Length: 288
Image (cartoon, rainbow, N blue to C red; front, side, top):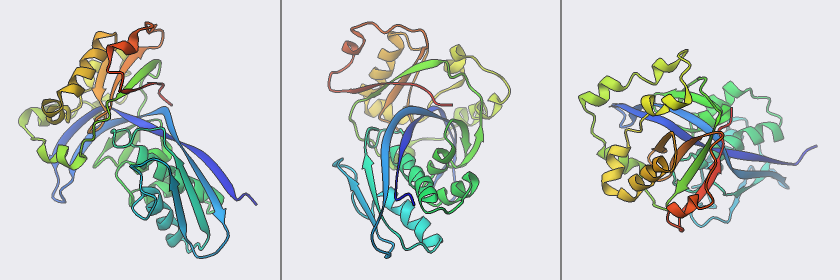
């Protein structure tokens, strides 16, 4: 019997993000395109001796809690309790995705925990069933059950696959700035302009848009809140465009910024010198 499993937990970027309205429950209705990328954490799940249903979390990252506050703990406990499983588990998280960067690292980790326990404990759940459980953990978690390229609506939990070009390479820059997602949404102002333009993403189905049209269709509304307060993040976006990116945007509520470059783009040897040496810079590729 297999007592150990290891999975990669891939990050995502938001190719576009439109904020539609504020809901009665306090959340915001959004429209976004999630694109999975090959930057990944590693999740290791081990069956331990004992039948108490205990979950032990191990992670060396100083910003990741090793207790019940960890989203992976929440995901594991939810699944064990739902199906009456009393197996003790140890979950080891090796972080490569920056924490609090708008890349969905925690949500991806949680989704992988669901998939890993499903396999390790032979629960036999299909992806749709796992996705339904994931909705109870966090808005982004359902996307990571499937990954790929998805149009997300609702609070980001209603998903439809969408075909977009994947023939590009990306540069992801994380300036190590912590931005509160609740603060960003609290300060976002819904206006008539926002309302009028928020049908673009849903209208992309079947249009077959090209890579050089990304900048026409995609925009992150949350930049309107973040850039005035954190001009350094806007500067990163502008520099990516100046160095040849066809499209650049903040991902989610920030603070990471990505640039999309043609697949045959040749990065100059001094490309990274355009940016603060303290920034974390990643070369990434989209996953289908």
